[in-house]
Image 1 (cartoon, rainbow, N blue to C red):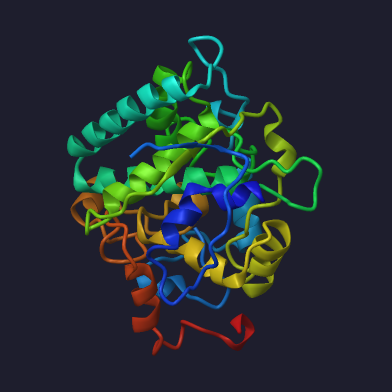
Image 2 (spheres, rainbow, N blue to C red):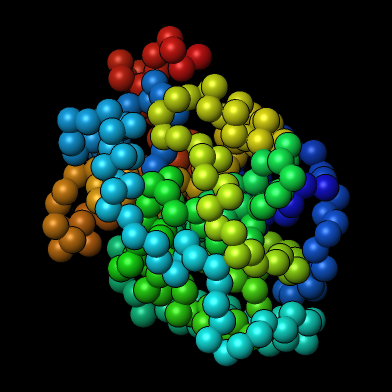
Length: 314
């Protein structure tokens, strides 16, 4: 059983994708705990008020961003300030309960704009950690609590990002009881449940993911922003062992959060005070703080636009 199939984000998005059937797959390898920017080529950012802020190609933009990235805590091997991480069911139950309470308290005291960015960062972090897997390689990688130091992870590894300033300090509080890989996956689960407008999503959580010290082994494995179906085939099908339907479900995570020009090159450069009052700007749909299927509906509603699909995307 591939580690990636245990990814919380994948389990979550199966619940909300439009017309994406999934076969039930066994989950082995992790101990069960009974505890309760980037569109394919041919889809225009213009339809969503999103656009490249610089007159550069996507590859040039990635090189420009890469030159600004400095290795930070999330792109370095996890180091627990409390010493060794001791994973046990007892410790996990304590950590799970306390992390869940702290996460919800954080969301309660955050403004709507901040909430949407926290949800987006948590889900993106969980996926990017697991997304560097290659089932044809010997290293396997998968969710290992460490991101490669590349522009593909821009917005998750720089100092000042939510991943570094909010999520990492939260893990440090419980790092003696839960691995960072498990923590990132747990936060992805909590983010999806928090954003669920029906308040009925309850995702089983499994622990046992091990942290790694070799963060850059997965360089080049994450999907690029623009190549389209060929890139989906390379990453999701060949590297991850998934299907195109699975890939369609996974990109539904774009329903929360925003694009950030400083991280991806996409989006308008309005000041934060404006964006806080207009949270749909730089977002993929009208409700970036809600985990729903509006991302898919936005694509369908925009199908009449001349910018939406090109022959090359089919």
